[in-house]
Image (cartoon, rainbow, N blue to C red; front, side, top):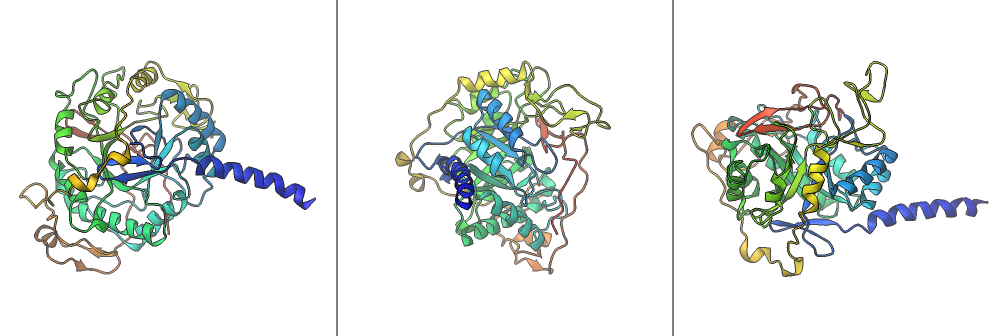
Length: 434
């Protein structure tokens, strides 16, 4: 009796493990991503945050969405907020089965690094580590972000050392646990006053233990049927050329004017940028009040009656594509398949070196790139940040706050129209880590 009950259970567990374990893993090598079977990896991604706390716990919903994403041509999802205590086997298996990888943010509104009163403390480190503990289990976890748009203006560059300290400590934690070297990086707002200082700062230095393993930008410059030069993408390419770590677009998809054409994808995956950039993540999967969605789950409903809706937008069901945006993106991706190069032919160490660390400038970037980073619980005086003096220890820093950032959406994305950074969305819920 006992044996007959155990055998089917073992078969199920073996099948789940097989689906996930057979997925080639992704690693960062020099300035490119490669899979464990030796192929260069390009990101065709979708921002995916159906609910405020965690979209990766409803296995049936993940299966429906993964199937539709296969039709779209996506191979990556980006998830902003997750619950590290939840069971993610079903969803991660469903996406792995569809050939879809995950880039996940380690922070949430209670643990994020703040731009104007930055801190990096043990509470934050523990919260970040808990997310890594959970998602390192899955071979289709392609990378993790230590922050999303922490720096939103040039005068918030003083927060950069805390972001880099988070990179350092999460890398150290990952390696101390003997986890797979899942790439650790940052998702930046596209702020002209921070280009290219922030990318160079996170990637610079002689100490590899402190350097980010990838860098990404949330870019909303290419609107309508723009062009490589008019949109400013040519300048992005100029800034990124020679960077020693992979770089990609972590949000894109200008929504004004309609329809969304996604013609920027031809530049990202074409000869202009594909040798430097590792792809792009389009914002976003689900239709919300911000009108960025590629699909919906049916007509709007009364949120006071339906428990499966926020602001009237259903959060589960059979995905229905939104025309013509979905097909426009699908059509672009169907024609864009850069082959890249084989890992065996790629020698990063022979030609790529870290950039020079940026120095502080009056009225702009204020961080001396060679200044020591704060340790956990340490605060930097502004003078030390600019001069390179030793940080001042102030004990354990207070827990990061969770300020309101505007309202209307669950997924955390920001739009840049032309060259101006504008807030477009916010997650309504948050999980507090104690």
